[in-house]
Image 1: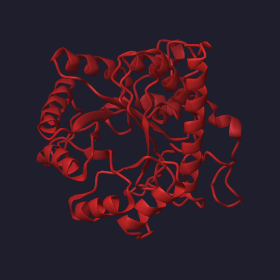
Image 2: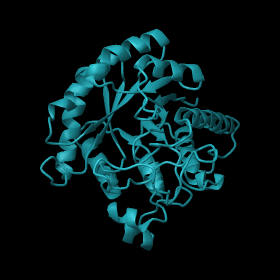
Image 3: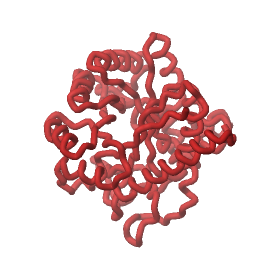
Image 4: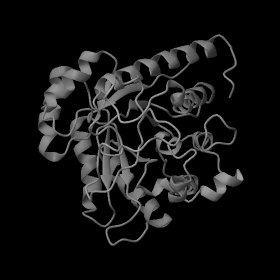
Length: 335
């Protein structure tokens, strides 16, 4: 029997200048009729309003994201788990920064210890912890992911990895970005494979660990164009880690658009689906559309981000239904 997942929409689908209250955001997600829930861990000052909005609209908060820099108010890690429990959230996805507050790059031991301590705090309130594959986080160094997952599991604690493979796909054909991940020479030599169409790719390696409870879908292209319409807080140009899923109208996006450039990110999702259908140990429970309006992504885009998210959501459901039906009929899924 195929095990279905819940499909959510990220809360941050409006441009930064849009002051829509939480209730309006929850209503918008509900009204699209595509999503099972909203991905959102409210900050403390919005927690009560978001719980009320969730109850009024019937749209639950089931997963939520939290960004943390180790060494800067580390008590917030445990507090985020307690806040999640108050909101009814089942899993908190932590983006743990590459560097600690004092500037040093986190060691494997620090990452493992942080995971263990935070997971214990989550267990106390029945909230699961996941660490995310994400830029500007320890996991941007791709070769660290599998050893750290195994190190946590060796301590007798389940490890959960949130896969957002857009953070790999945008580096395909981009040596500069590969250098940041410490894999440029390995990619050029064929020792590390980024492309989900190629055998031995990183996504397949991580799925085989059976630690992916949570997957995120952001449309993206290899060597994705940078978001020239935005700036980072320090004034620098951001990266580009989003490619519109539906063709933008003239003036809605900064770069040319071609549908075929989405094929790698679609194949990544199909890879996740095929693995989940054919491996009983696959723990996948949650998936979201991860189109957001911060600088690396869709800040200042002219198109509706939630329209694009809904289109992604419909494609995810259709693709899952098709592969599920093929599997039920005994048709090979090419895994």
